[in-house]
Image (cartoon, rainbow, N blue to C red):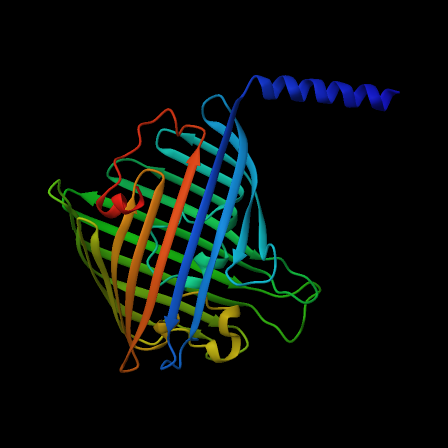
Length: 357
């Protein structure tokens, strides 16, 4: 009877607490089609990635700044015979007050690391690993932001090695000019219990750039030019020469006008992923074309629909590497609504959204 009384008291106080709080909810859908024609390349695989993510979340908010959410990211791979191919839990605490933001738990990745260059993560990371498991902290205002984050990607077992990312990025706007910094360190450790055949490895990237960014009300959404340096630190403790520090120059040019856009990134310098022959994707999550000393990525895209709740983009990506030209066709559609969707006025859909009326 005492256990029943205790359970009743707990349920009573929990229901009282919930009724006094602000119930939150959000639902997201992310469809992606990514066809890579890389048969000419010796650095990466030729494949088609396509599927849809459905991510419902429900939570509570209190004292206007604290909230926690639970949910799931459920993925269906196009053409698969399975009803659900991948399901990842979502459960996190969120603190948000003016210019401060903090996450702890398992939370969506895309909104928090969208500022990172394509050089840092290959496409399959965003397509198949939509959540981060760890911490994210950011301070920001209209002119600048700075964040630190931890993403735990592998828990040690007798067969699996421990892996995690530690990252930091910052951005400062000075009227038309800006300074931007992005970085991470990927740590590949051992199993539990320790396997004497394994050793500790690290792969770090840091990109510092300076540039100009312009936009106006006439339809020029983006006009960006930047130059910078991409520095690296790669370590394999099993080798006597197990520390490598590749470095190279990066030039970026992006523009977008009334829904049409292009993003161009040029890398020229030392080849990356020095120990790829030993560790492959187990150690390297970055763009595989960095294994060449020269690489140019040129993206051309069209925003077929862009509103407050829906973003649809059709693109053609060109990759110049190893003296060859490779192609990639991409279509993405992201939609998300939450409990505030009726309380805020929706932005007028832009450009080709009349196709969907």
